[in-house]
Image (cartoon, rainbow, N blue to C red; front, side, top):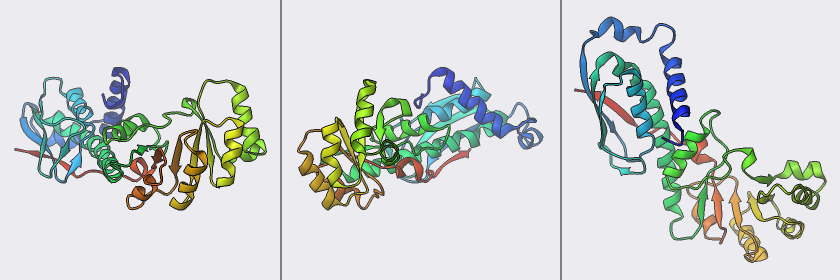
Length: 279
């Protein structure tokens, strides 16, 4: 569910609710809402979105009221217009009110990521280029945020540091050069693909000669990216990265690179405007 297995889901929901409820619980609802009061509510998007995290939102309500009735009207990945109902709820008032904020926070955050991601994916449609996410995620939320990025149409890059070898400028400086860094990684025989970050076209041949299996062209202009694509000539995949924005990604994708990675889709996505209304 949202990239979490059942144990991870239980822990996440319990931890988030514990953070919100504190030691004494939702005292406002306890002193204002009768224990047997029942409520009917709807969660609705107030703007156009690409939905992500709906099942996770449900889990918060079920955790506090296992008997709550939930009608799921839309699925993750759906592109919704403003005013579209997502969930309908019927159940005890106190637990529903207590779970509301945690459910909405999660749904708004993940949907915000999926919505922004979809905008980037749509911007490069037809180029053959693939959008990648990055490790620029909120600590503790990476699995969820990368799930939302996938839901929006991106492909996941490394989930963790043990997922692949990415030799960057600091590694190169410590090793004494690209050739030394790549050869050191090759000698280790990890079985992982060796990707090398370059920020100048004159670094490409040394990286390939040393055994690089993929290149990350960092902060290169479209002009330099086209030159890089010509120099590589299909020998390895090329990823463009660094400062990519929604208004620049199309020009970058059209240079012929295979991938474009964008940290903004997880790092800077605004929360979606989704609300819960009682009837």
